[in-house]
Length: 74
Image (cartoon, rainbow, N blue to C red; front, top):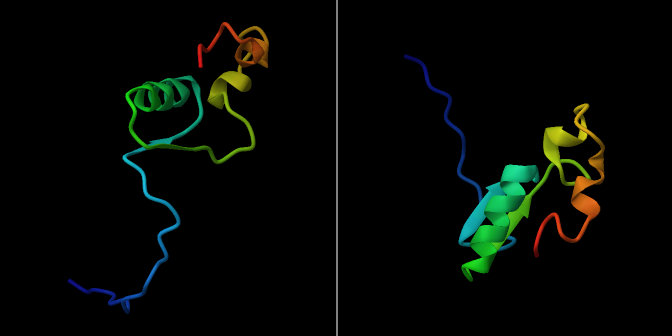
């Protein structure tokens, strides 16, 4: 078996968190909200410029579901 050896490097730590949620779709938003409500440091990372995930690309109604205050009780 052949290996590639990489030199060690230092990577700066930008922030520390207890819970890291990847993806701002409905499940990610729910997970991040639940963790934050428990009082732990929570970071939500979304690769695109808006929340909603694939539900914003589907033909299910409109993407306005996340704009209403009573949809997600923050």
